[in-house]
Length: 150
Image (cartoon, rainbow, N blue to C red; front, side):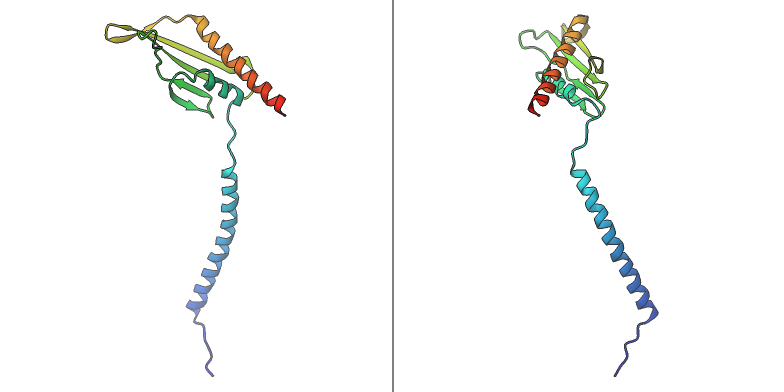
């Protein structure tokens, strides 16, 4: 009968492989937990009702940039087909996670065509307030619809 003798190098190799396999099992469970967490939707950094109401209110304008975690919506220039010599742009800032009037700030810009180029024009201050009020009204409607549904 022959005896199988393990050489020290083989024993070391088996030990390393066993340790790697055991460590792999541990990281697989961590990886599974991480995957489970990443499948959950991240929460927004701002009030979701104000965010959705802002997007719905400005849905006729093309979007240039949106950041739901920072609460910034920047539209691109929009020209009404009935007034092609003027265009508007809106910036909306949602500043809080609470549904409050002071959690919303809008900036509206206007340009008029002057020859072949666009020039900045004065904007009525009430326009920004009207858009803010429209967003706030829609946000309240969304909130009430959610509360009534529960």
